[in-house]
Length: 250
Image 1: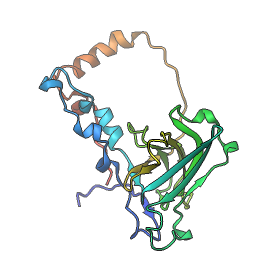
Image 2 (image 1 turned 180 degrees about the vertical axis):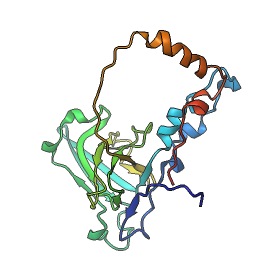
Image 3 (image 1 turned 120 degrees about the vertical axis):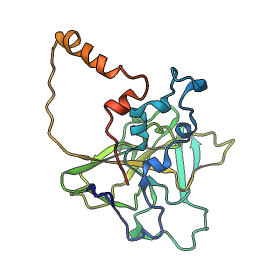
C-alpha cells in the first residue's frame, strides 16, 4: 500500500465470476494511440498527439465496461425499414439460456422515444439497448458519466451518453446505443467482439456551479506575459512538468 486514500467505485454482479470484469480504461487504450510514435521522424520539434498530455488524460481516465460476449447483429432492409436481429455469442453455443437475473441481453427501443437526428449518417437509425450486468456504486456525492470511450467514439457500437447519480441509484444502468451500418450483401452479420470496450464509466464529484463572464483587458498585458515566460522557459514536457496533476484509476 502506498498510504494514499482513494475513492472507491464498486462494480457489483451476482455473476461477477462469469463476466469479463470492468477495467481501468488505461488497460484498453485505443490501438491508434498505442502505435503512434511520440515524435515525427524522431524530431523533438515535431511531437505527435501521443505527446499531448490532455489527450493522454482523456484516453486513460475512468473505467471500461467490456462486452461480456460477442454481440452479433443481422440486418434486413425492406422499403427502407430496418429489421435488426441480435444474439449473444454463437447461436446455440451457450449451453444454458442467459439467466434473467443476469440483466444481460439486447433489447430495442420504440423509435417514438428517440429522434433520428441523434444518429450519425453512417449509423442505422434504429435505437437499441444493451442491458448492463453491472450495478455501479460510488461514494456519497459522486455520480458517473456513461459515454463511449474518449477518442474512440466511432466504433461499431456507440452508446448514448448519460449521467447517473450512482451513489443513490443502486440498480443497473443500461446502455441505449446506435449501431454502425454495413453492407449486408457483402457481410451477413456484424460482430462486436467479446472484450470490446463498450462504455466509459467516469466518476465525478457533484458540485454546484455558477458561470461568470470576466472582461479583463489587462490580463494579457500584465499577467499573460509573465505566465508565458514561466511556462515556456523549458523546451519539452512543459504542461506535464508545470501544470499536470497525475490521475490514478485502479
